[in-house]
Image (cartoon, rainbow, N blue to C red; front, side):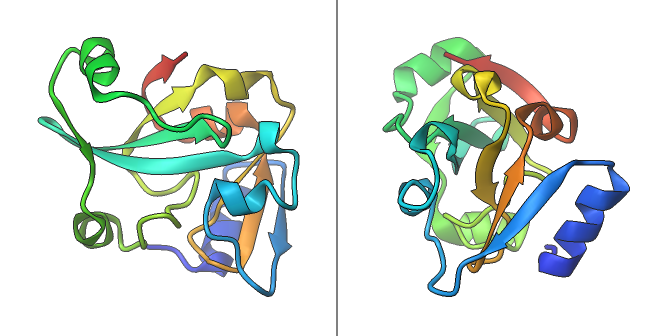
Length: 149
């Protein structure tokens, strides 16, 4: 688990163009972020539990969720649903709902709709900070499973 300084250093070391924004009241997920930023550019990070382990699903804030049957078909293996928050914390060190958009080491499914944005806003793992980052950097720094429509 990285604190905000380690997260910033991680992005710098990986030559990412980014901005960190601090919010004194904190931002609890993409729905809260959409109050401050263009909702089309806000990305939520959900952790799903599959028969092959945990995976992070990075989706636009306007999308409610992905249905399990669709995920099963796309991945070709069983998805049980959202991971238990205790398991997310144990596996990543981060609270569910505050998993950073990059640097968590889980394989990802990435919402193809976010690729049209110049930048997206996502969690940093720190409740008081949001990162503005290019979608292509999120993809480059992640272990991609697939894009989702």
